[in-house]
Length: 321
Image 1 (spheres, rainbow, N blue to C red):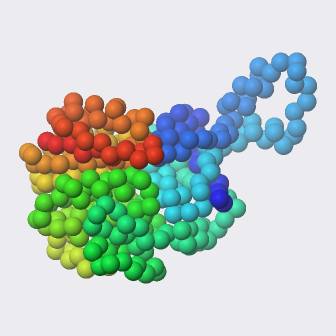
Image 2 (image 1 turned 60 degrees about the vertical axis):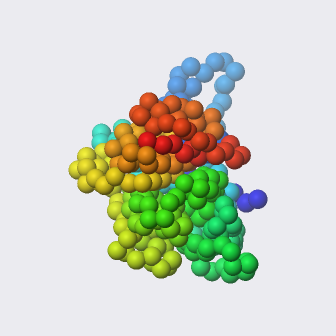
Image 3 (image 1 turned 180 degrees about the vertical axis):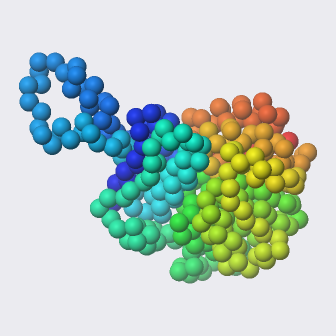
């Protein structure tokens, strides 16, 4: 498998939080370059180090960088977009700028090449009992029993190839009642809310912190012949923008959120406010090790009857209000 190196620029103060959030995305290993650590080593080095190469001395003034390696396939593309969404959330919350520029840069590959090379790995995939997800450039030949969800993620998370999306769609298929009103938080490409519409939802609202994700979701909804009268998209951060959070006032039958553990926990009261009594909350994007932490927080907020859906270290959970 080919890998792509991604350097994420922050500060010494931002390393711990950033690495925690990257772990929630599913990234298990990091290479950290930090001037503060290197300078501490220089000050405390023992007699075993009597020569340090001049190239290494450059680390004493380097910009702090957390380096990760992503597979050069559709899952890697999803993870890259999830990294960018996480960085946008961190930047929005970092009003004092203590975490640095919070930008991701790819090495050894041009951005435009990355945007296209992974497409060869994005093939039609059957999800649950009713849907098949496919990109516009691929054909699907089935027996006609499944509904086709055509998705072009562009620069937004959500191709259906990642476990978190599939687990969420499987729970959604079992939970949806025709005519339901759905709220999709952290919509990415819009795959969950569009899937819900194709499964019989009456209307959907898709929200993301990034403008390009909201635009991609609206475009994908149109490709699936879903009218803008019943499918609305918005962008904003409900955790930092109270006016925006307060503007989402309707009580929904179903809320989906495929994000990361910390954000799901932070949104628990918002979920409770926006979900009608007897409604269904489906959360995903959770590494299995943190599932209990997320479930406990949601139960403490008033939700009940958690029903997990787990696959290869990832978890989605269905709860009721």
